[in-house]
Image: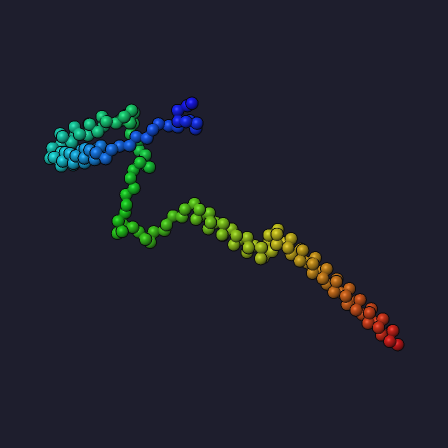
Length: 160
């Protein structure tokens, strides 16, 4: 029978960190950050110390990262603007969806305007259909009137 019973064994057993280990790691992290803050303050007094710390940071780069300077726009953190810097009067750029929606509405309005003027193919077809229907109704009305007259003539002849 395989490991894990009938269903088989999936993955490794979960390993949990104990709370003491997590606390120890957090203390070490805080101490490291505090030491870096102290070094920055003391480094501002002499230029030689800052140049050596810059060399250390460049030496820590991995692979070809130190050889090639790459400017990645996505890597730079977004700087938030202050309320005083924000220009409310400046025109806001529309997103692609908003721009497409506005263009679609304008195209629909242009089409409706041309349709009402009878300049579109659909409008011409509609007008032609309406003309045919109107003529058919006129012909039907004439037939009814003729039949009515014929019937009245027959009624008047039969009464005599």
